[in-house]
Amino acid sequence: MSGATLPKYEPGDRVRVSSEEPEGHCRTPRYVQGRQGTVRKLHGSFRNPESLAYGGTGLPRQPLYLVEFGQPELWKDYKGAAGDRLWIDLYQHWLEPLNDRRISQ
Amino acid sequence: MDKPHDRGGWETDESIDQSEHPAMDWERRLAALGRVLPPGRFMSTDVSRRGIESIPADQYGSMAYWERRLVGMETRLVDEGILTKEEIDQKAAELEERWEASQ
Image 1 (tube, chains in turn purple, orange):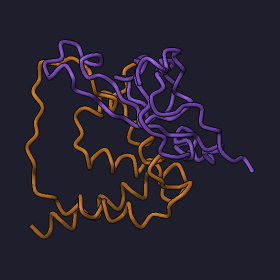
Image 2 (tube, rainbow over the protein chains, first blue to last red):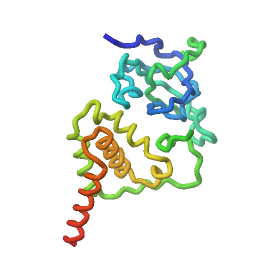
Image 3 (spheres, each protein chain N blue to C red):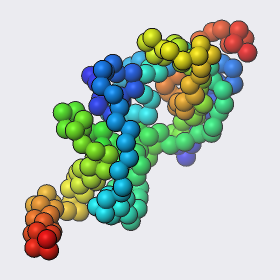
Image 4 (tube, each protein chain N blue to C red):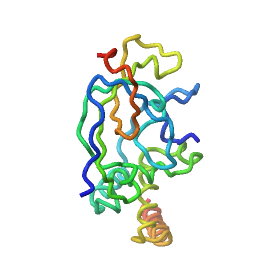
């Protein structure tokens, strides 16, 4: 079985989103690419849409996380409250670890 | 390169038109067609998204939501050899003729 990729992150982990934008279809919008966030939840593992979109099997399944970002860090001249947050689902292969895991908890 | 569907964060002075319009018959039909096409390799959520995202940027911006869905679906039907471009154009011409005659 092609199975699933094992989860590498847990809630509270700080991560950076990859900015190596692939040529084709992906589910990671540009406004979070290269940004730093905090993993809040593991949803489970799902077939990879970047393969499914081209008729592939989507295997191995990729862990999918709920990741939190500070809105003021995402948008230029953000006018909302400083504490506003954005939550978005991101696949593990888009995430790189940051080392300050304990600080954010 | 900017992808036309990945719009969040683009700077613009244009305001966003958030007005709604009543669903048109062809939009309802297209939604229904999307449900009956065989899922999986031919038409899945991801395949459908890819089709819509491959619409050239200069056309994408001027199309409404369901027009993009329609173009994405047609592209898939042709790519998979289920219909040819000529068959689609011919049927569209027939329907248009019938519509004109009924007015």
